[in-house]
Length: 301
Image 1 (cartoon, one colour):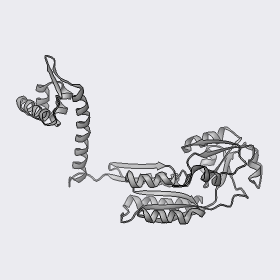
Image 2 (cartoon, rainbow, N blue to C red; image 1 turned 90 degrees about the vertical axis):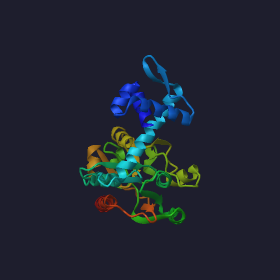
Image 3 (cartoon, rainbow, N blue to C red; image 1 turned 30 degrees about the vertical axis):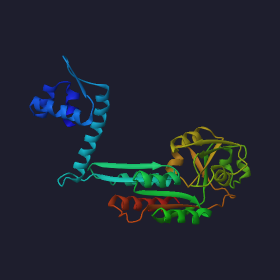
Image 4 (tube, rainbow, N blue to C red; image 1 turned 180 degrees about the vertical axis):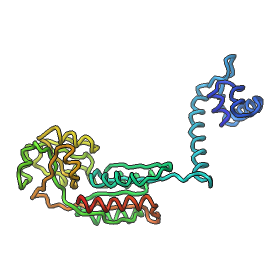
């Protein structure tokens, strides 16, 4: 397979043989044996050299991927190879968590690193951990779903630890007329545009039911988004908009000319919960992130 990839790159048996430091007849014989084994012609021998057949192109693409994986496995387990720093987490869209991640990133050494940070909803966090091998997750849910989520996490084999409980705050442009009010009610928000993330749903429950429970009925205009960068541009540039958030750092508010306010009518409690698979041993990087997470929670919540 390695010979075939090199011949495809070089376009010539002789050039490939020079690179591989193997006699050209041996390379030719190996490729013929490979073609016989898999039952296709990988190359068409022409006066110009070795050209890939359509089936050969497809095969070479697979071969390159397989060889890359073999190399990764060899590098991973060779005793003399440097250990790569690895960390992966899926989280809700929250300023205090992203602040913790930013501070955590400063703890990385100069060694090779592979870091994954995914912002999404609770259902997808659980899915990524079960199907895509994310090691840590933080899920967010309303307090009234506590029994449901704990039962589900037990069934799926997760360990879970409370990070924090909180009520949502409002953020809006400093130019929003509501920014001057001392006490904001649900009724005050009527007529304004709510910025909301489009996937606040709970596994196994109808989306319409959850949206109705999570979002007040008196708002007629909503803009649904899927990532946090757009929310700040919208809030900053449109004084008619507002958003429910789990408290934002002062640095974020100043950067986008926003204000943060409490709503006297919103008394619903939410929970952020750290999860990982039972039996998983936390790494040094995992523990470092959790330390930064606790620090950010104390600082901003």
